[in-house]
Length: 611
Image 1: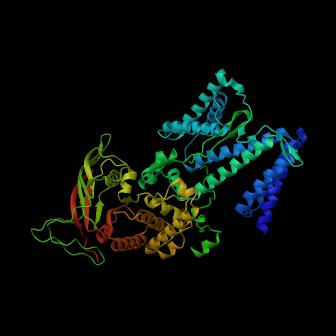
Image 2: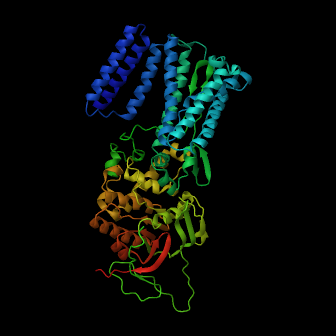
Image 3: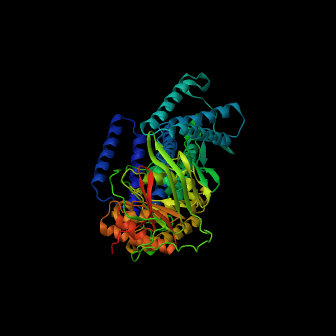
């Protein structure tokens, strides 16, 4: 009750302030309003912590406040016009919020898209007899098309150059309008009233004894569109689509490695299996009444790092304040390690280490084809040959180690294998099929997952959301499912939450109870566990571990290797492991490959003879 009362008081104060500001007719009254706002802001910043207001109650109270404000000012045309414009600008900000923050697309040409939609609707309204509702939709489609076309050069640039492209477009569009007399120059186009069905928006409003300005209809239309846009953006954020867009914004390399086509997600062309759906609600503009209704482009403006965002867990009742949360809660002089060749006798295998595959009887055919086969794989960076004709076979269910000095091409091998770098020569086959040249998302879809030498977790997201990034190919990412079928989405979240918790329990039972905590709050060993689980959760056929012990102590490394061994034996995984800790290589690998200057210089079983 206290939180609801606080919410009502806050909304009432904001409504009263807005009414006073709109009715102010002197400079003194406006100065007083600004002073009151400054005092209120100073007081609120000193209240620590600010009370948590009920979200749904605040939304309904804000809508009611807008209605009350419009009724109080029902005879004031200018004030109602200002309210309408404010509501429309909020809708426009939601669209920019989605584009800037959700997908991380830098765009300073939002006003240009605003204008494209408005002028398209205006020209069609003057030159054709199309219904105004269809004209508005055509204006939105034109704005969405222009935005998509502008994104093509933006996505090919990085840093401030991307921003400069959008700024240049905005300046060019404004100059074009100012010198174009056909479109009214700087004065724009004048149009007749807006008519949607039986509603003539320029007729005076009369409800019983209550009469008011015709602008009340425009306020109502803008308020309805704002409510729809807000609901759409909120549902978008609290869905599997929201998680995917978070990953695209925070780490494009990790996003592509786990099946996301970054360019298509940024332009709103989301893939659902083999179908694409445009994630856009277009701009809707009627020039004569300044009803520029900017749409939600489907792509989020978060505050600066440190913001507090409602997580996907709240969709299924796993939010922190939801009741269900408690219920569900290289030097060439580096010595080469001793390796046993393929035909040498095995000196023995330490306890707890996977033994070698049983030898086939003499003369028997090799019935086990390699899961991964590389032939002559070469990768160059200018004049540097990072991989030089690498030949490699990995058997199903085996654990292969890759060792060598820094700069020997180990991580480059992983990057070429997963499609981050294309091979300049050679062929890679997986399960007998060639995969050379596949993009990262294609490599992920056929069953190859990886970790990274440097942690690439999305630290602002929860552990659960990070795990769902790795499970992208099993998640429903269609618009209809995520935005409309909310009960089915809730069930999917619950099922994936349970699966993520069970997987984490194999590695560390206490960590499984912290799924809703941000990944940035857990220690390094737990981050490595989460990274391995993120690669495992999609049930890949081959997992690539790039120095999983980096940044950990010897004790933490031993514990993590125990976890990996247990999972490998339970699931029968095929693993390729890059590691500098030779005790780790000896303990968990069956075969080992040594790289130096991009070439394979030795292959066999690594054995130190340690207990």
